Image 1 (cartoon, rainbow, N blue to C red):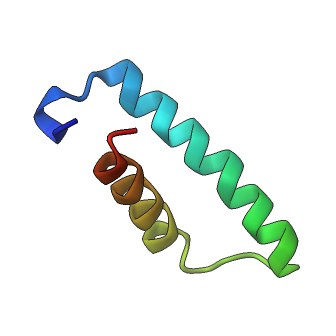
Image 2 (tube, rainbow, N blue to C red; image 1 turned 90 degrees about the vertical axis):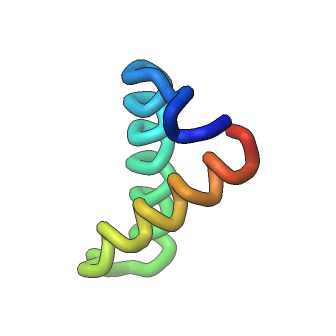
Length: 52
């Protein structure tokens, strides 16, 4: 799926997925991830490349 084809609903779901995954990551890390914007960006780009 290309970014141009992504709907608002799909992007919102992708953000929710990222939030859940990042929460688990922080639990495992045992600390707040101060570099969360990069983490979210990497997560979302990986999912888009996989065709979500």
